[in-house]
Amino acid sequence: MLAALLSGIALGMACPAYAQPEPPPYIMEAAEAGGVAVWIDGTYNDRGSAITVYGYSTQDPVTILILNPDDNLADVHQLDTAGPFSLKLDTSGPYWKMDGWYRLTAKTGPGSEPFSLVVGVGVGCAPDSIPVDAGADGVHCMVSEGASAAVLDAPAKTLRLHAHEEGATLQIPRYLLDSRAGEGDLPFVVMRGDSPASYGELAADADFRTIVVEGGGSVSISGTHAIPEFGAAMLVAAAAAGAAAYMSRSGRLGDVRTRLGSA
Image 1 (cartoon, rainbow, N blue to C red):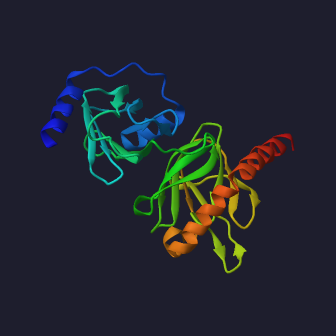
Image 2: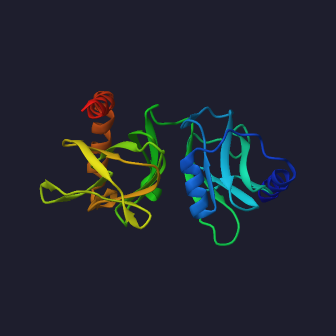
């Protein structure tokens, strides 16, 4: 297996990157801050399909590492490129046999920060949802408009994501991240870098809190409660409730944004 993957590295170094569209502003901002950033179109891919990974790097080389759902190495590429790049992942290969969420990490030269996202193969989120990588606590889907590459740092009780230039609307499940004192809600702490970011809360009920973050870039949302504070049974029940309520919630999210814009 190692020999095959090392040959994949050599192939990645020898082949030019595929042409790609202009990186969106949030990718440029993330790459300037960390050295490299990547994105893919959509969250669902059939096993055996080709997945195009787009990215931007401030230096070379760029190493792309993919782990399968069991956290074993599935694929690795190294590209001698700086600036925009893209590459195709062939999920028909021998190390892509599992359906599930694959974790992709991009890394470039010294001093850069790894950029991670999850790629669904045989699984995925609804079209108006994004995957939230919660590490050992799995991957969860969150209804969202204008956000991508979300990661939940459960010990820090912080959700980190990249908001598009026009801002982002997030329907945050309470079982995933919440901010409260006793039975009452507290405001989230929303930051862009080291500065507070403007946001507003549109709606709140027993299962979700819906917020709008203004402007784009890397955003962190911190609360008082995250996944590990819930028992396993409660987590499963909350996830099931969220799935059952998905259609009505996603419709209301769009309605609320429309009302907000017309107010």
